[in-house]
Image (cartoon, rainbow, N blue to C red; front, side, top):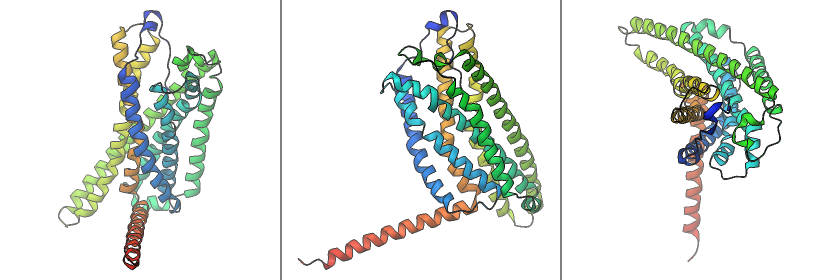
Amino acid sequence: MEPQYSPPGNSSNCSSDSNISHILFPLLYTFSFFVGIIMNGLALGVFFQISSKSNFIVFLKNTVIADILMILTFPFKILSDAKLVSWELRGFVCKVTQVTFYFTMYISIIFLGLITIDRYLKTARPFKSARINNVPAAKILSVLIWIFMFSLSLPNMILTDKKPTQENVKKCADLKSDSGLLWHEIVNYVCQFIFWVNFAIIIICYSLITQELYKSYKRTRCTGKANKKTVNIKVFIIIGVFFICFVPFHFARIPYTLSQTRDVFKCSTQNTLFYIKESTLWLTSLNACLDPFIYFALCNSFRKSLLKTLQKCVIRTKGNQNSEITTDEETPM
């Protein structure tokens, strides 16, 4: 949950209002919204047809739910940043949708870490991982993750309890009580901890996966069985999505937070850090657009169900077209 403090000293007069803030970022989030809602809507429909027969599928289903919730916050951010709505809606953005955005972001990060562990076990110990597959435990763990993150986020909504005015809605932190600011800071530390733990998990697991794939390559390069190796390479899509979407933001937010809490940067530097933070924050929204590629690349059940659904749609469309042509031919002149 990103802090939005008013910096002390002269920096409080530093404004970042510009066409970039009011035009470019809303356009980028509009792109993310339409692409994300289409792809995740389709993914959700496909997952409804797939039984939760493995830990992996359970984690994927939770990820798509988190992505859809994140996407539903985009229209509020778009309208608020573009200043297309009254300042009253900005209070709702600060209190609800902005908190939900970060809440779902860190849920996605946690599940990417769990998916990575699952893929490592599948790669390094394919037979043993099948035996330790425990779907009920995966479901319980998923519920606990949602409860934990919701418990962290709910006070951020409740403690944003000052009456919104045209002035204080410009910075969400101004709507928080002293207890709200303290809780906000605590949640920031917890979320940073969540990110760096999952960052370490992904780095370690992919280092081990790389070793396993190299060993597999050495064993199979002389036997003509390289196709299996090529399939396993797809697992690297997870680390690609993680580094594109989440790593830049968490490196950018450190100097940005310092610029907001310490009067040590010039106004131009503060604005530069603001745009970097907002740009990398948009990259986190791309996670909702890229996750469906993970489902398609790594989940055989998802891929088969999706292709079957698309084939049915094509056949139905062709059938309707043929029916219309036949009806036209039979219509008397």
